Length: 429
Ligand code: ATP
Ligand code: MG
Image 1 (cartoon, rainbow, N blue to C red):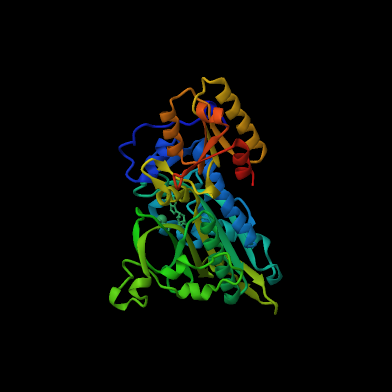
Image 2 (cartoon, helix red, strand yellow):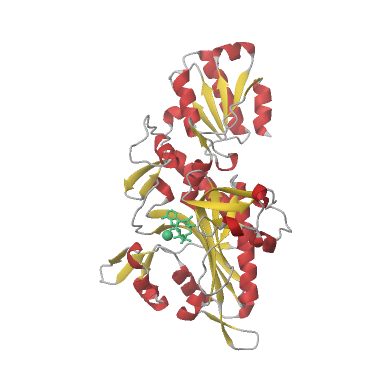
């Protein structure tokens, strides 16, 4: 993509109403624009990151054996009256009437809809387990939308729902999701700490929130250093051991009773990026989601639900990866891998060489953003630092004469000179 043609409305100053760094940087880097409180449009750069985050989530869901569906965002109130949540949900649910005066709502979550699908389609225990997921916009009329996409009113969530015949099955589904979540966040370069969460009376230890660490997180968390050492991708990952490792919010943490020795206790601030939940037969009972069991009797299915804040993750990734110059994208979610900077667009040899390298990189499957604008080197460097592509390839008149380009690593700031061929080899790997 050529920057001169790219829709990238950069801002020089941080807007005064943006309180946290990810919100400031997302606005400055032209990733999003606010339409109304907590409601955002995603512009090309932001949308590219959102899609990459979504794709990692999707791949890990598929790997865990879940199947993708897409449920409607507009739902009939009737279904929620059946589950008993219509009154209880309160003002976070946006309600309205359709032209026939039927009460409708914008889905804040999809337990009711998915349970309705299940009860209409699945009859026998032989068709279990099932695990259905979607990546869909939710609407919650949050009392205080803030921090940009981190707490929006409209936001993108991956939500999935498991259906099992009995508790043992439900626990297997839960543990399967537990590991899938750790893998998902790790692939984005994030260490997520699973924290035991309140699951009400049922399920015991079967509700966890996943917090990633960033200085601006909403809550303080304490955890065992072992979380930083575990290989979440191991096939034989011991989930039970992981669940027993110490992790606590500041409200739960009691220094005098903490089982972790001081040298192994880590603390930081956490952003909740995921939540998994076992809730037994709460919805299946209310909505009559049953199957015929092995002995011919009706069995109410056991359910769990599992959410990841896909759009919140874009903000959270920036909170965890930035410096005073701008964003530093982990490679796995970067909107482009390489930013090509032509230091002198008025110089024909420079321009010919940069255009040639751009074509070769793209042919090798490397995504590039090529700054071909007629701007000063200072402006070009500042733009690239701000939007945070993992690598910059810098072509200038001096280098062209010497037959070298500069390759800069955005995270380390390290710059190395190499021949164009060596550069192509490096990225085409
Ligand atoms: P919170 O306590 O932050 O309001 P929640 O418990 O309401 O979260 P869930 O219903 O479990 O959240 O939703 C699953 C995930 O969706 C959360 O872990 C979070 O990452 C994301 N999420 C929830 N609310 C919002 C929001 N208003 N804006 C962006 N992401 C959100
Ligand atoms: Mg909430």
